[in-house]
Image (cartoon, rainbow over all chains, first blue to last red; front, top):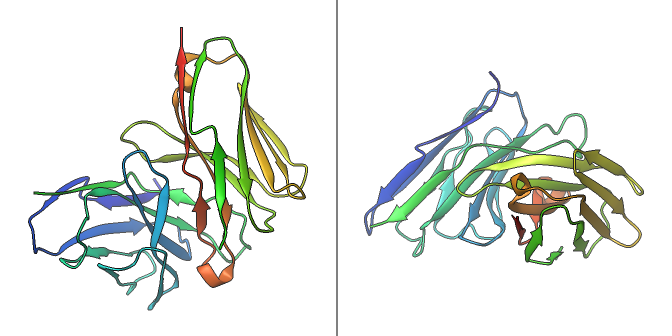
Length: 115
Length: 113
């Protein structure tokens, strides 16, 4: 089935450690996004990518890094520079070719906790 | 900067009652999205509104868009417990932001017997 797969679903990070969240889509979507959600809050944009080998910072990019080496994949690394990384991370994607206004689809999310 | 404001942020309503959630946004946009989120889960797309005056209905939920007023509403008719969830509205950002969505803070809805 087509969709967006995020892994792992739950991840624990030790202080000073980098961790990488995986996001893979088989929808042939052009654009991919990473959002962060804190408890009881809305979604905030971390990074986005419209084409392979290109990505841009969102509103809260500090302490995060991404890559887009393949159209299907957009991994997010939470670095040790991110001082408060405990949150729910959501990956999303959408088609751009047909014009914007198309639905953005979300993965199931990854819970990251600092221990 | 595009701002998206929802109200109310918390809503407790009895089964069988009607209510409306409001979503205001600060810049011109023809596209507005409504999502549902259950606790600990991802977002589920409910409605995509693509033009002024658009109205869409699914079951007990109806969404509308007034682009001139920069206002969307999500109307709940005869609420049932299964509608308890958090509802988000979101607006398209432009090409400078990769057509990402800018979200409101969400409305937590609790439907009680």
